[in-house]
Length: 640
Image (cartoon, rainbow, N blue to C red; front, top):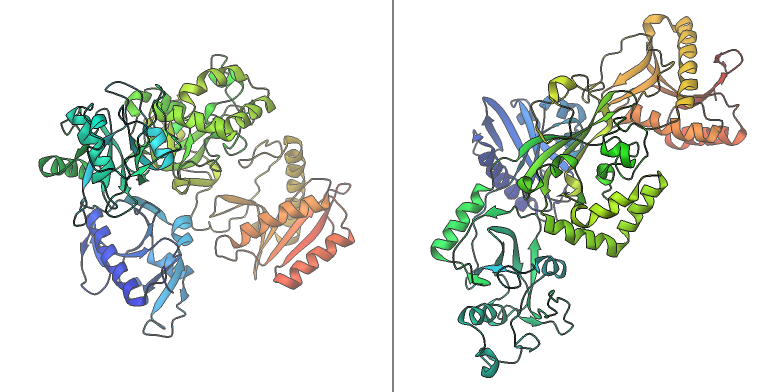
């Protein structure tokens, strides 16, 4: 299969070279000169690499028979690689033969990347070490974007317009495009030597391919590549889009592609009074050493977020929130984390959110990069839930938070958040007062959100989470979840009554409907036990995707899944049950049941019959309907 339209030979070379780089980064040693096989912690592994856009991995059968693990390296937008691991047995279980007619025909098995993501183990994010090298003639610069020594920073505006900008009076409105350096002399002569050098670098020296590192205080906070003409990248912004608080335009600019995945570092390189400084010699060497040190392992943390019934995309009201009258969420009716996972709002590739555990000690955490696992407590049920992990979350500065607040207001997103607070009868005044200075405190790439889908109850919370406070804690170990992901548990018959249980899974159907469905389930279970025997019927059948089937019956040919719904609309019942049954049976690449049966109290109509028959005929899906009789409290015998 072509990868980014490159040849097979190029693909092989890419796979081999990248696998060896990744092996070096994780401490593995090569054990074969002709295949991507390595030894790591006394285990034999193979590393398979995929560029962005490629979704398939191929592994020769011979390699599968001699390694202990298959690792897949998935290239990310920023050039890093997410590394996942599965066993060779699981790869064999899900693989298909290659469609190639060439030398790999009959020798290579193919599996998709979702196998690794959904059923594998996330190992780590690998950032391949690179040295800062320049093309012949290109230079590396350090640049600050502050009005004077202690004035306001214009970095946010430069970032938004994808430029590096500078200004000095009396040249703040003078276009230098058609003038040589130091012309007109009458204006240049009014600049100090340091000002002359900085403006000259931007207006005359910078060219396409140069690298700019952004200085803010004692930190280098971003990196960019100069675009524009190869001999002189300078452009004069005659629209004066960037104006500082003093009303002075910053029109002297070069276009830049900023790398928003850059991890900040603390370093002072000298000549701090210079707005623009060329880096070479000792300064460049010191910068490169500091950059290489940022490749250290990202720390794993745990953070509590307030309860939410809408998957943390908008406020969901007081249900499940803390009953402690001193708690913030009790006082105002919502928590600032309730928009944390609304990843429809993206700025420069990042989604911004708020975490209360970050807010405590925000200044200390600023510009840290963390893997943050999230949990929440439903105060109505006292259940602790594992939500998922944000990988490579970056703690933003208070200055960046203010920039994002302004952007949210401009886009209408902030107004939307206020309306959502009103929808749940929350107290909006506190939000209005705090948002200008602390609307967000963390950002991450949407693809770095790794959810537990659906969220799962934690069975050993006291071991995994040492305190229930809103504090940023070290992650000690993985939680033991009620419905773990992985291999499907063996069928074990048994009765697990749902009667009186207000919450079975994360999510929100009404308690009344859940109560009715619980009674239906208990009655149907008893009926099926009489038909099939107690050893062949399981209520609340666990499967290895973090879910349970309402009832499963086992016979000599396989299992039959029953999904029960109590809505008074047969169309609604079919819609909800069908999607669940398809997932229970086939997700992600299995067939767990031979028949799928939808159960509800509604008599079936002709449209519903036609619809189910069409599904069976068109898609060969064995889905049927049986009515639950509310008078006799049992299934009717007729199937549709």
